[in-house]
Image (cartoon, rainbow, N blue to C red):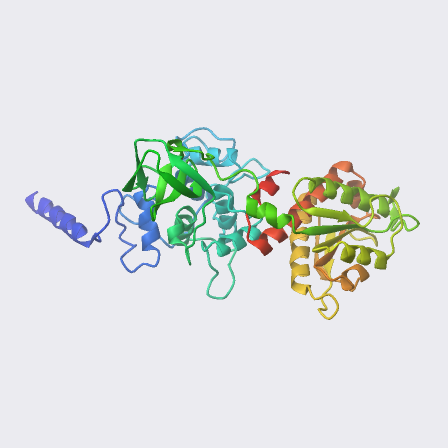
Length: 471
């Protein structure tokens, strides 16, 4: 018996000796995250805030893949969600699931979603691309598709690509990397090439306000602010604000600040508004007047093109963008007339809307690939990719891809230009959508969102308020 006690004492002593200096009792030590581990700072930071946890035996398992349940729990803890285990809307997430409370609240706040069959698939691994989208939704970073979300993380110094030059968006993300990205997302000081710009100004309304290292009382206090003191708000994380005052930065609860929104600003920022006012979008409804375009199944292409174009125009109303249509009624406009109009209006992008024919099915988008005439090849390709992705998702259509096209309105333009073929008018299944006001609205919304994706990627600005108008 005495021998067993002696052995236990020795084990306790060894463990105590290998705990690195600087780790408080609030942050457990993990045997597999030593002082040389590349993610040690971020892992121990999140552990101090009880955002990430290890096993009872003291291991973090940094190279294990992150599951959807774990991702919901980790993000939920950063946002101070109520993690109380409870019933959910999903048939495969019972009350007994450790993450059930976090999953349900994350779904209610549109951070994560389930599947059409009524499942959540809590044990399914999260890919690096899905991680990017989750972080953008949770912290309102501005990316509303996986590609745009990845771009936002890169621009903000939250994530980098892999050694092979790709982001690896389809690869499962491991716990160490997830911890790094979450720590950088909530605390700008962990970011690459850290820079922070104030988004709001506020005033302390408490007699003494603790400034903490992270967004919860689990984190250590690093300073105290006094009543009436002015602070710059750099970021909002749940109900906590990351602030700067007197050269010091840290987190305070927004309840103790006056003159602050309780979330990231809901409306467009002044910088965004100034930017979009400089941008003119040309929407080109193909055919018209004496040129009906393709005709089949009781439909005329010119009518469909115009209807969708007018719906796109309506969606952009009051966004600040300048929108101009090459035709707003059933009139004939020549190909050269369309290009001349776009140039006369000093357009910044050109989107031509068409309907396909020839017996196929699905959606495709064209861009011109010879820079000798239209020098905006790469931007045209990006714009085409953004719109194509949105249309395929919105219509659940066959993806015919982004293609090169030697088309007059693309070739002769002097701006990023694309031509969208919504679907095949002579295909019964496609025609049913093409002639439906509901599906035309879906197509218009997809084109709107695709254009926003393009501009968000090009500008690096937070377009979330403009996304929220239609979602």
